[in-house]
Image (tube, rainbow, N blue to C red; front, side, top):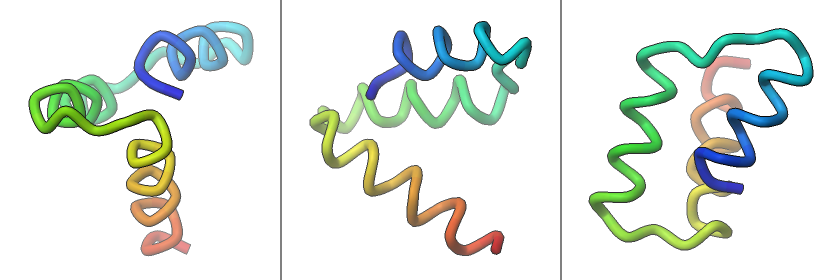
Length: 50
């Protein structure tokens, strides 16, 4: 999905991206993760919280 998609969906929902989310996407970019890899990382992160 990437930062742009995540930011757009968040804005539509009236949610401002947290500093943690911005840092997470910056890390994805530094690591060169594909959209699919980013999606898996986000799902894994939220799965741990549940």
